[in-house]
Amino acid sequence: MSLRRRVPDARSTYDDPVLGVNLRESLDDLQRGEARQMQNVHYESGTRLRNGSTRLTSTALMLGVPIRGGHMFYYGETGSSRLVVYGTNCSTLSAAGTETILFTGLTNDRATQFLTFPVVDKVYLANGIDELYEYDGTTFQATSVVAGAANVPGNGGNPPARQLGRFRDRLLAITDQGIEVSGPSQPQIWSSDSSWSTFRPIEPGIFNAIAPHTTAFANSNVAGMLAIQTNAYYFLSGTDFGADVTAASPPAGLDTEIQLINSRVGTQSPNSVEFVPGLGTFWFTTDLNVWWIPQGQTQGRFVADKLVSDGTIQGLESVNRAALSSVWMRYFNRKLILSVPYGNDLFTTSQWWLDIRSLQEHPERDAVWYGPMTGQSSNIGWTENALNDNRLMMGEGNPALGAYVYEGLVSGIYQDAVGASDVDFPYVYQTYAKSFGTPSLEKYIKSLELEANAFTGDATVDLHDLTGELAVDLPIELSSV
Image 1: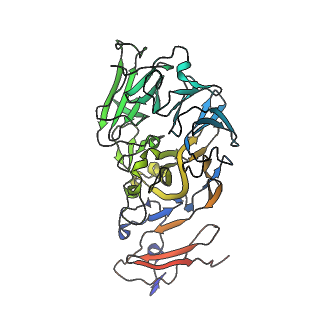
Image 2: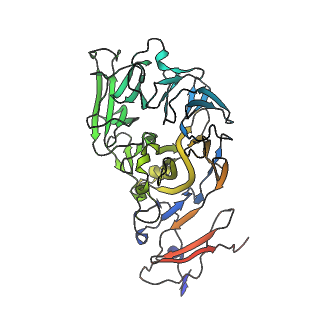
Image 3: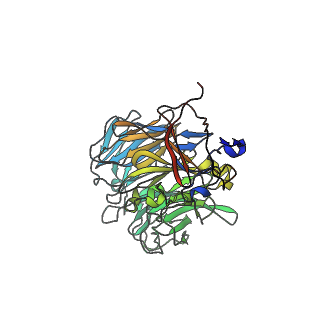
């Protein structure tokens, strides 16, 4: 580059985007190391294209319906079973995508939550309509048929469970009555609108999500659960929940507590609540941001302000508020993946990635986000990370494409499986506006040199200054081979 003479490299070179995307600031206020846009690009020892996805199911499991739930159930010492829900069916899928239908009597097209309960080596299914179901790797059945069953959510007039959690030797279930508690290692026995064993919110409304969290008190760690409403969250803890949760009165040794922590921050996105080892718990908030509660604390802070845009690039402000329940967030390969719906879509169509390695190793950088990652449509994402597995799985969210299951972020793949098609996705890296050390002077760009890894297709460059476009779709030519 030249301004009458060569500009020193320290001023003419562009810094790597180690600070990620910033949609909030004006273009001339972006810092060195920030980017306006990193569409399908992330920083990993250099700026690089994200990996794509592959199809686990060669054809749709059913046409006209999306995937509504997915989970890998690990049991015994070596057992595993990949579960998916679509339409009225709950099925297992092998590593090759072969389906075995376990049950066909679920209420149609319901968002479904799974939870593995290692205490009894079973997985449980809740969808807010049907009664609680369980699976042990062989038998899929209603929990109410287990010997001694009592007050099972969704059975015998008891409100159904919308989401499940586990704490010590108990299962917890969100119902219209509050948070119900199972007996000790007895997921077939439940409290039901109890005066002492059912947990209720202080703020108006129902609970939308529960998740494990550890805080610190008196120099020791206290394990508990976060219970989250639309605009509030609580910390639930205890050491003695009672041997008989169906009893009319509490036991002498009862030791449980639910505390209101914040009456302004909550979620309508239960699948977005995600624990990151060593950092704490994150979730997507009702007011379209991401809340982070560090491990050992109960108070948190917003970490996605840079993803709020007033420009042409859609940020979190454009998320479809009518589809907040479809938002999901998962921790995978040192990235926290936030998948959100835009426009009128009722399924997620764009992802933003929080760089967990940067947050841990360079806390002075604060939250570093990459995106938007476009080209995929999903209703649910889940990780499979035991028995030497390391996979991010996704269920198709667009009913027009049908019930497909994909593996995401597959090494060496640079297309996305979308329904029956493999689709290329665009790579757009938009830098900050560069002053070359003299922001008040007009510049003449004589040449621009790029260093890039091997790529397929045709690459182009757009040039902009603060007044607008200077050149668009300039072809990149190799200076040497």
